[in-house]
Image 1 (tube, rainbow, N blue to C red):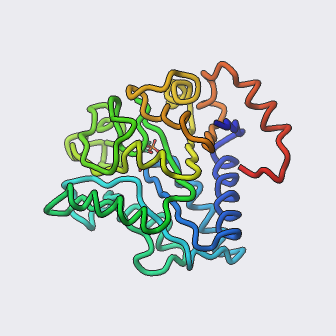
Image 2: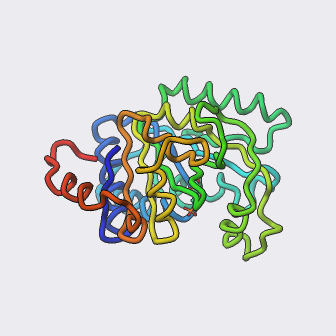
Length: 261
Ligand code: F6R
């Protein structure tokens, strides 16, 4: 796993935006895994800017959202489908229907989850999966004790995650759904290059457990240790509890440019 410590979230977002732009240049039909929450918003701003200013094209690319709430109206402003439309899909030139989300509205949710897995496989798998991390180490909405082999399925949010996400619902925890449909840890592990981002001291414990803790279902993000090419991009606050912080910085400073992220 590579750990990149950046000065601030702006620098980190531009770095990751640059890696996605390079991927789309090398492979215009790349498949992107798209996270929501506040962490990737700077990356989406950076990609929208590159689309606008540098003609970065998403015309042949595909996208798969990580997760979706169950129980919100489809066009609710905080449904992850709406969030992705607002923050990235509607700001660049993806082809119509090139970005799919897990179907939190399906009558038969298990069947919809199986279809989602099949759609990811049919697209050739995810090339670059953007990830945030919960304060409890969740990735996607795989809460602690999620199987590290799990695939897309329905999950219940922990009370902590519902409290963390209440800020998107006018600070009303009761408005945060209890259930979600999420790519599983096993789904995320199939991505060719997961890139986990974390900003701020509030994520420092989760980042330390992700990178330096044991691989454990209690910290689903620690499953990234099992992936051949995984990158963790963190600002100084999120890096503040890493024991080998200086080592990661030395490695990154001396990394040859041609390796990219
Ligand atoms: C969002 C997602 C979650 C968030 C995590 C962090 O699609 O899958 O794992 O990445 O809850 O949320 P923020 O970025 O809001 O701190």
